[in-house]
Length: 162
Image (spheres, rainbow, N blue to C red):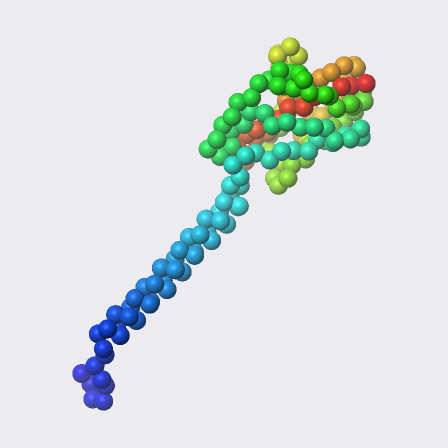
């Protein structure tokens, strides 16, 4: 013991250690919670795929979620002409272009498939732009996307070409 110094009270010393330890524990818990919340939003922590909006000169086309694998969840749906058989079609004009947009990031791969009698037929698209047929009738489509994260989703819509 040095000259002029008092011996520390053992209870006071323990109390100071406890307070330091408690402060560090609280700080660590807050850091973990904050990091988890940030990483979920940065990594696209949504449990379901984003629902796109499809629009045309004729208006907004109703889009329905179809099969997907998103995060740790996969879901399978019926093919569009079975899934939407009782739904009213949205009216579009011959040769009209439909444009899809997503909240957040767009998929890196896009596909468009026409369904007739439960059979898929490849359809043409230029990225998020879809050209409607020139022949009048009711058409069932599946629009699919794959994101850089590896997540994938399909969407169904039904149109009547006038």
